[in-house]
Image 1 (spheres, rainbow, N blue to C red):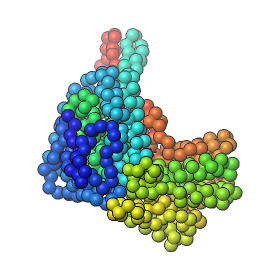
Image 2: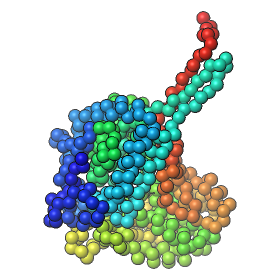
Image 3: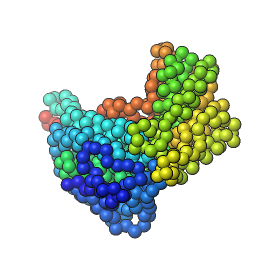
Image 4: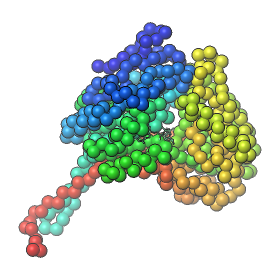
Amino acid sequence: MLHRLATSLRRPAVPLFAAAVRCLSSGSVDIKVPLNFWAGKRRTSQEKCNKENVYEPATGRVLCPLEPCGAAEVNQAVEAAKSAFGHWSKMSGMERAKIMIEAAHIIERRREEIAEIEVVNNGKSITEARLDVDSARLCIEYYAALATTLAGQHVQLPGGSFAYTRREPLGVCVGIGAWNYPFQIAAWKSAPALACGNSMVFKPSPVTPVTAVLLAEIYAMAGAPEGLYNVVQGGQETGSLLCHHPDVAKVSFTGSVPTGKKIMEMASKGVKHVTLELGGKSPLLIFQDSDVENAVKGALMANFLSQGQVCSNGTRVFVHKDILPEFVEEVVKRTRAIEIGDPLLESTRMGALVSRSHLERVLSFVDQAKKEGATVLCGGEPFVPSDPKLRGGYYMTPCVLGNCTDEMTCVKEEIFGPVMSVLSFESEEEVLLRANDTDLGLAAGVFTSDVKRAHRVVEHLKAGSCFINNYNITPVEVPFGGFKMSGIGRENGQVTIEHYSQLKSVYVEMGDVDSLF
Ligand SMILES: NC(=O)c1ccc[n+]([C@@H]2O[C@H](COP(=O)([O-])OP(=O)(O)OC[C@H]3O[C@@H](n4cnc5c(N)ncnc54)[C@H](O)[C@@H]3O)[C@@H](O)[C@H]2O)c1
Ligand SMILES: C[N+](C)(C)CCCC=O
């Protein structure tokens, strides 16, 4: 039975999964239910350390306290996952798929409610949050379908002997998420893990702890065994307990490069499998033969989704010098027109950044850019909406920086906010060298109407996800992940099955043992 999230409010209390109608408004939600979940139930943590508040970015109000899990709770969650693994891993792919498809149906029916809660906790616009929920659902549907196809190989050997391979699950997998796509990340990790027969303990970012628990309730409602997908809340201490836990077989992490390195180090102690989805500073190359209207739209998609807090963002926008004035005029015009404000309103296109400290960090990058000689072509200022209830929210105007050079901090470092740096280039050879001059390699894009140039350029770009004449589209059928320091492993697509399973080879002798001894 679903818990009632929310909401002793200034308005009537609303059960989370009450009805598929719009029910929340910014500034009206208090979360009163526990956010940890294991062995089929929401749980309160007994841990006394590291308590912190969870905020609503749109208003700056406290939503709830975060109750982090300590060693005792982490052990209970892992124990629950171990127990579920025993049962789940023995089910057929068809049986697992049935439950996952049911979970996807629940998500489809509850789309609006899940999206609203995501907005309240994350600050992104409701329009984007709905698309994130759709991506989560599609991912679960996709891996449910793949679960039914998991199979091994038969290999004929001399004398009638043979071998076969079995694709087996890893065991208890840990997922650790970032705050920019809380529900989507939880689904992108759990769907392939569960499809392969694993169980999962997921730790969301302490900044956005709310919607991963909804996913736990959804899997439970769909008929998953108790303990199949569990949620423990907390920050680095809880994450570290999970990474070191001897009963954990794999850690799948989404977050920053520095934390990713620590995760890999911790996992290496137990020789655990890792997937690392890390940061980026991706280039977008716009050639003189581009359709400029589409290139401008692509640059906006590459920079301003989720208030610019997207790992794959193409924040280094290289524009051929012949079309630079035309491009800049149009991109600035459209950036100025982006409607900022209450993320729960349909008309809003940019909501609030995730936290006060993150907003200040992003604004400090704009100040630094000015000091280093970049020109602010628009935005880059704190924004205070006229609605009094939003005055404490974490808003800024989306920013386009001109006159940028490769050495500037804004061009070198991941800002993770709505700040686009525009650079000029003259030749394909030159721009490729500059585009690849980074330790990161998550994504890259190219706009051109020359099909040969498009493929030639993509071949030379050192990035895991490349876009031709579009940007930041991530269909769940297509693998997603980074080159270089942007990560290890992939999410989505068929290949991810290999990252959540292991092969067993079985040799079968049909004759006598031919012993050398
Ligand atoms: N490649 C991708 O798919 C992808 C997607 C989203 C975000 N990101 C990256 O994530 C970053 C922003 O997210 P963030 O600020 O939440 O990242 P972060 O690295 O600060 O935190 C990510 C998660 O790791 C946990 N964590 C922190 N220290 C830990 C430790 N020592 N042991 C175990 N867990 C620990 C955090 O609590 C959080 O859940 C950006 O760099 C962005 O590019 C990457
Ligand atoms: C769906 N997006 C916008 C491509 C985001 C992918 C996940 C990275 O932060």
